[in-house]
Image (cartoon, rainbow, N blue to C red; front, side, top):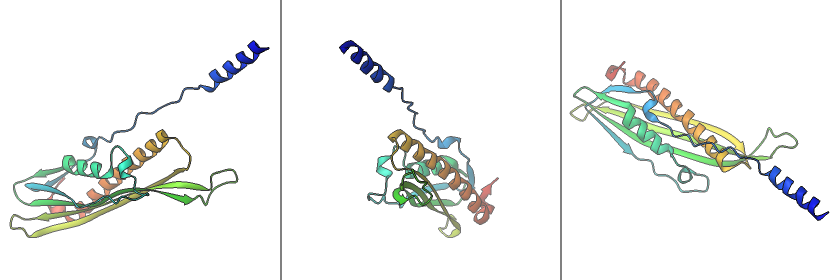
Length: 190
């Protein structure tokens, strides 16, 4: 009897040890994203964004922060051509937050609260001539959000955040191209 119970216990333990699929986190390679060429001799990036340390702000908890991604993209993908003008890129906001909200669409056996992740970019582009006069400027603003269940694995949280970052930077690039083509079209190389 003791041997039979031991065998059943061991069998159940082995059965419960199913492999867990761990996905490798996505690294956003900004060099593979769209580029913009502008008639400028100098490009300066001025990071004016100060991360707010709060319970909802999760920038310090993720590997690749929105500010890192936006700075990297502007450094690598805004290309300077020509020998006059100065482009100043002011990064005003690059925040990501996680808030607990009520799940208004919850069915009978679903969780009543969920997490909402929100990412926001606000960047100002200013083009000055060599005398320091403002020739053109525009502001690019994009936001993206997604939700998740309240009780999920850390791996799933990382996948959700990486997906949010990837789609948000693509939205930002499209909006940047749109705004620059409207307000700085005479200085772009298409």
